[in-house]
Image (cartoon, rainbow over all chains, first blue to last red; front, side, top):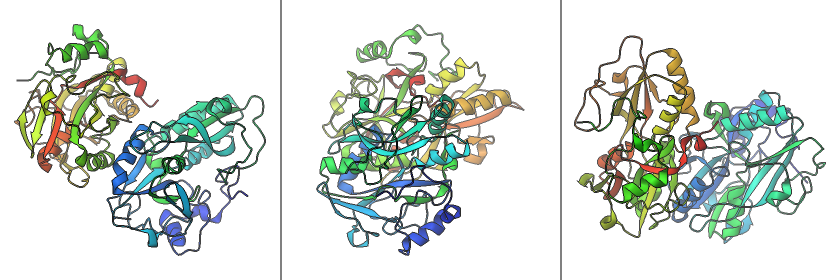
Length: 275
Length: 275
């Protein structure tokens, strides 16, 4: 049911040692259509949102008002599929393993490239993934259990057409030391990423009924044990938020990456960290 | 010649103790048309850019690509002069002490309110000022000499219509300790502000002929002694950049604050700092 291991980025994959460009070339060839979680260790990976120019200003306004969920690392010029800053030479029509195509808020296709959907008015947004701080947590030997991502009852601040709930990724930490390090380390991955947690503690306070119980909305939500006494549960803004917003706002046309099938940049997350 | 003291925010003004809302009310009444540098100590102050909606997407793209110069703290909906997040109840048509109105890249007016220029398609951008980290430097007892702001030979990354040079603020620090603290502290004021310095050392390497020598472009550039041996000179992105970009891009219609006459928010800079 889940392609994602509940530990995130185990470090065991032979694809972990590849450079961004090497992995993108494998993805572009069609050889890899799986999640990118365990590939290109240390690299900044991105959630992808592609919208017609007519929507782009309001979406960028939405991003600015909801930075914990979606703070763009790069935005391409209309009609240009090359992210010239984060990955020169890449092609956002082919270099994501799996896309989702939405029309009027409905998922209509989940292709491995979007050549046939491409238009001259499309603008691509690259939104940094929480994988950035996951590499840094591992480097600092922090322990945690990963619960996957969940839709909350927290509303995004709307902007024009765009509105919807905040989606979070959830992690449980065994000690205060682990939790404190996670706050400190994720705070370093702020600009273009999700930054520090937006909630700590009770999941029901933000509308999450039960942690570890998969629902229909999120196919990659793993079944794992509920939090243990003493564990500190923390919640981070998630780049899947734009997808739920596309659904809820019934956006006429929008393409995203399929959850956990991210775009891999040429840069290490540490190159982009704040301190 | 200069309304700005070369030490920035001396702390001596009786207006330093006011809250943002109190000071804005004095500004709105027309009683205060001077620089805001020494008012509302600790508050986040903003550079202001106001553009027709037709330009707003490209300008927001420009901001995203040039965050050290202009990273918006808030963007209003078209036609709405109230910054609902940073200062609910404020009016961006009246609450800045002095504005500059540009048409086709020429300064055509410098009014104390923009009621007669307001249009239903105008979008306001609030861009955090370097005053944010100046308060924190003072709190940490860091020493420096302020050189004011300078146009450089560094080009901004263009976006659509918008292009032009990076403008920097310049400060000279007497010791490595002061310089290191300034890097650390300004790095905390990243999101919505200018973050850490973008250049250290030789001014001529970034096209600044001579520090401390006033030129025509910047009326608030103070005449002060050149750097002393051992002083470390550092350069930060400056929110005056959009004004030079408006000039160079010959933008059809754009309103900004007049340099150093900033919009004062309800929030303390420390509330918005990263760590």
